Amino acid sequence: MFLSHSDIENLNHIYKINLINSCSGYKSANLIGTKSSDGIENLAVFSSVTHMGSSPALLGFFLRPTTVIRNTYNNIKATKYYTINPIHNSILEQAHHTSAKYDASISEFEVTGLEAEYKNKFYAPFVANSPIQLAMEFVEEYNIKANDTILLVGKIIGLYLDDQLIEEDGFINLSKAEIAAINGLDGYAVPENKTRFGYQRPKQLIQTS
Amino acid sequence: MFLSHSDIENLNHIYKINLINSCSGYKSANLIGTKSSDGIENLAVFSSVTHMGSSPALLGFFLRPTTVIRNTYNNIKATKYYTINPIHNSILEQAHHTSAKYDASISEFEVTGLEAEYKNKFYAPFVANSPIQLAMEFVEEYNIKANDTILLVGKIIGLYLDDQLIEEDGFINLSKAEIAAINGLDGYAVPENKTRFGYQRPKQLIQTS
Image 1 (spheres, helix red, strand yellow):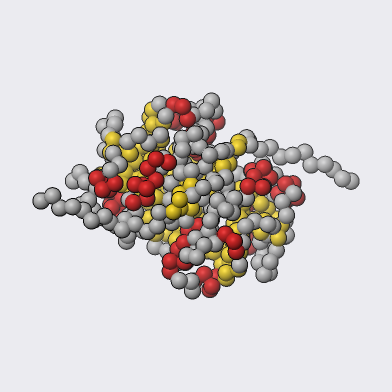
Image 2 (tube, one colour; image 1 turned 135 degrees about the horizontal axis):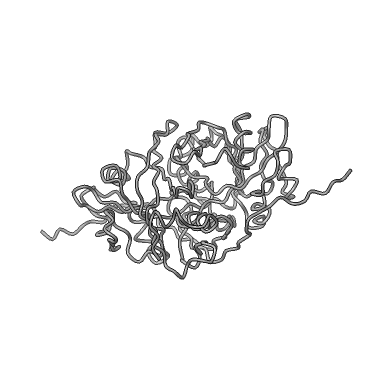
């Protein structure tokens, strides 16, 4: 099957969003937790959280300021703090349900039954029992001209981790953690096996003169 | 285990890059193919390719202009075109080896034995036999102040897909395609199962008064 640029543009809306959301491979599966300045908690699933660098430890994600995701954006801009919680196998259905469009006055924690957890006096709620929990601080944002979205950049200022998941060299074993990956808009997979190849150095190339 | 911001900053370099690269969950696994203006092919593995929007169909990825990845960046800036090829189970080792730092005069296709494929007169090489192949056109770039990286934004102008992978509603079944996901810097997993939950609508909330 081959689709040109205009073929893609002319696809039916649902077909197009399913196709384009799944064509670049698996996406990260995260719940972002925030709290408004008047104390209303918000929780939303995001598939665009991306590693940007380790020193400083920065993660970015994309959002459309005009959709349901606006609650997350407004809360982060108002309070500067949020949490990122990679999604565990046991809460896939509840996690995905946070994509439903609830009014800002309603907490997705309450609706889904996922439990909010507060620790170390951090302002935003973590998802209780998540094997990995990241406390994030807003750093900067970029307005993406090409499609009027926003890249929001944040710094990891706290990291909570189940001790059993970390290997000697700092690698977190995500399959042992039963963390999900997202396929398209609504598909979730929990990888069971992994291979590590290590740091790669150039092969000695044979001179054939 | 809890690590504060300063704990993270003070970690040993290798431990830190392993930890921070794996703490936000699985990452997409893609090979980006380019060709310099004087005809030298380049192929490099990226774990930061991210969906930015479907109309227009935009994907972004992050790169450091000062590393090996510079070949990819320079070629895209000079020629405007590149390919994105989600990584199949059968080529994990070769794909990962493209992360070794080869000189710009050396083609990673040659070094790894992966085959370059040209079609529809597109300038940049695809990875032959990839179940999904995307022809990309450069759109714009953003300099990320927080860590001196670049977000490179491109538009999907052609999409090749194995017909068996696509479902009625446009969803590409990545587990059927045996596409990998990346864990950290050097871990690869190929998810075998997936669940789809569909589009979510708010639940009827019960009035309790």
